[in-house]
Length: 88
Length: 126
Image (cartoon, rainbow over the protein chains, first blue to last red):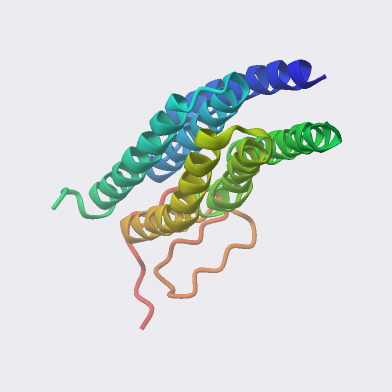
């Protein structure tokens, strides 16, 4: 039961990640693209947490935390560039 | 050993909830017509879905996984609303049109456009 839930969840999250990646490519506006990238990272964090939990390996948690930090800074930078046309 | 079973079942349930919410979020960014409405799906559903995964890790995980899951959850709670706000503000400053049927642009910059055509310049609103 537990194994089945894990495999279904990982497979489905991978599908969702691919869907988010496709949205990044297909988005109609730049703001929508930034948003899709942000959502993709959220899905990836969920995937890493799930994997780390099932395998009992805490190292993936560090990767998820770093991904969250980098995605936040990246979103801030991209949004600022989108609105003002320059980074700083 | 019954306590361990409860933890595993609760973890599975939380994973199911997280899958449901994340799926709703991703469907939302496909279904919604513009950034401002897509932010609702991404900023609430997908983000809370990931929080459910982190809760599952805390319920069913081992010691070292627990603390880091709480740390990540704390960080996400602090940063996800800020990121959503910054995206909305940048899109608004850039003048991306609102294409949903009943959008209301309260500052009257002329962003509302039901036809979906991009608005080049804000009209005079004397």
